[in-house]
Length: 280
Image 1 (cartoon, rainbow, N blue to C red):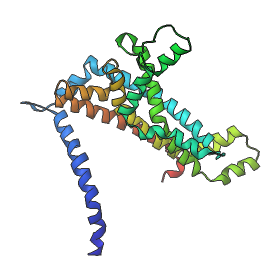
Image 2 (cartoon, one colour; image 1 turned 180 degrees about the horizontal axis):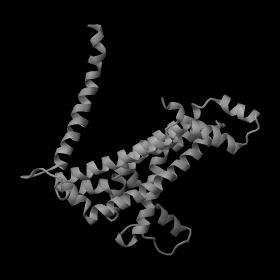
Image 3 (cartoon, one colour; image 1 turned 45 degrees about the vertical axis):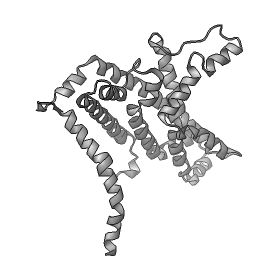
Image 4 (cartoon, rainbow, N blue to C red; image 1 turned 120 degrees about the vertical axis):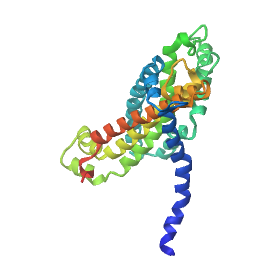
């Protein structure tokens, strides 16, 4: 009987995966590859991919991801290297940096809106110190470029801590003897970083990129709160087709397309960033 205990302990997790992940996933595939009264069809994918709405949402999603992810990686790596020096008070700094991890997308969007709205914190501050004579408009279809900047800043603030935590953990797992040996051989700071730290940090970089790319293509709540459909993204279009148009087939098609794009990027990351010493 004892040998079955591990399997019994796994049953709750297995049940959760089947009911809350497996079934919705299967249902999404069924809806994406079917249409009422037509049965199996690729018409949903043809309709989505050929639409102007998809092309605009795809471009915006790629653009936001292409800007946000590299910036997050650079900021998070710089912060992780700085904090890893373990100076006095570094633990307090870690707490401050990771505060946004406790916030949901919706909360982050509402906070960002309260900062950048016409009567928000930023405009009130600039008016009080007489840097501007009238409020700056950040939202509205006419100000799409400003909306885009707000989205980038909001995403950087909200999601950089996740990358920071992963990279800091990776840095702390690197044996200091490698660095000390390099110093004995006369290596400078850049040589130690490029020849030792960065190669050994590849597994952490891979994990961070996989998570951030997955979340970047699924980003929705933050953007929807800030700008609605002024700047459409793929996940936002899926939500729009499900809740506003009430077309579950097209909404599921968007979801499958997002999953396919994410898998393509994941395979690319794994192929290019996989450390040689992990390969067998």
